[in-house]
Image (cartoon, rainbow, N blue to C red; front, side):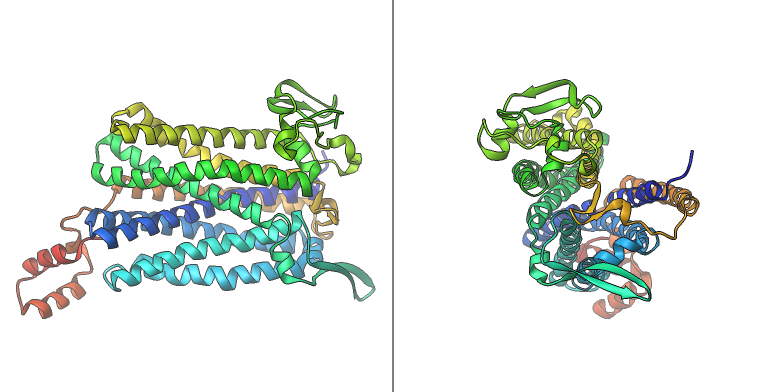
Length: 486
């Protein structure tokens, strides 16, 4: 079988971005929850909330580091595997990436040092401010990445110019209206959906770890408070993403009709209202969904609020411009199904918490331990559906994916780099799981005695100055009572 540089380049980008996307949603969602946890400590001065903030900060830092390490690789691929694409969209995409670096990454990474190492070195108010800034930095990072990706889905605020280098002439997209680029027709919907999905992932991660502690009867008070905070985040975000997804689907119907048709397995337009398939097996050869169960005319109602208005099917699109159906259909339906599962699960937990029986339901706690897998899958599948659904275009209606690949990179070179990335990312994943598991098993710091394990020289010097030469042991005990723990 002959190797295909285009297919291998697409697989490489899919591998690297799917691995990377394990971490940004978790850091965004976890960062928001950490702000609430540390804010509750400032308001109540309850040391358990301080322990909570310290513990989840350690987890956050690990995932932030993994996100940075895995994210850098993707940007290099624009120059190695996708040079034609980079030349075409460099003015637009480069502006968004530059803004992400200036306004988001520097903010996030700068205050991260205070967040991680500033305990007992800055005031509690300053530390809380750093937590807020890190959380905002992670959100701003998502803003600019989503802007860049959304522009590829719904281009706006640009014009096409010719550029000649030597004897070759190229086409380039140049920005004519920066804010039209930022607020292109799909940015707001996609950004809202992405951020809500990140909150769900962060909330379910915290609930998973907390449920694990409760099942093991360890750190029970800590775990209950962590679970309570994240449960509210998870429930509200799960309800919000239902409405966000509805609005985004309507936006896709308006701006990218073939993508929605692929999502819904809609091969033919029909004369009446279009059905909504709950599940089935799309068959592109026979142009129908096999074994499908559908709600008649429901898709028309959801898209147009009109049961009789047909939604355009793939038959309205030239064959060469049609996206593949199977992958977008399956990933989209799994994502929607998981979203409904999140709503049912979190609302059930809220009802049981209101009744005071939540933490007696060990079977439900076991479900929550495993349920964190759901947001990981739904976040990944959402992007897969969106990206595969816009094929064959890499920039919608302007540049085909087949025309965007680097002409000088051979298939063997891409295959070799794919194998290398697979090995390196596999090792990184093992290290991440090992360190994460170790931190979770260690658990939060104890409320008593933790301060005595700080850097001894500085703690002792400060204590001797404050207490006039009292014994080191007494000083450390007093310091632990006064200042808390790591």
